[in-house]
Image (cartoon, rainbow, N blue to C red; front, side, top):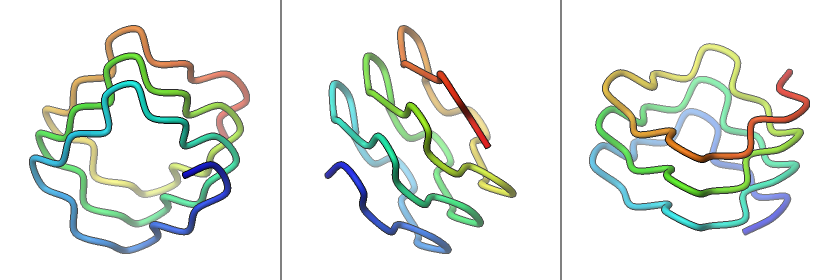
Length: 65
């Protein structure tokens, strides 16, 4: 999923655990209760993303825009 465009998508309760979502555009997306545990979100764009109650434990958040 590296380099994906998930902008403005609806992903409530989605499971991205362990996924490689590096260099992706998630800006403006709805990720309430999503599971990003252990995911690689390095260099991804999370501007204005709704991460309410999302699990970001052990996620790689290096280089967030």
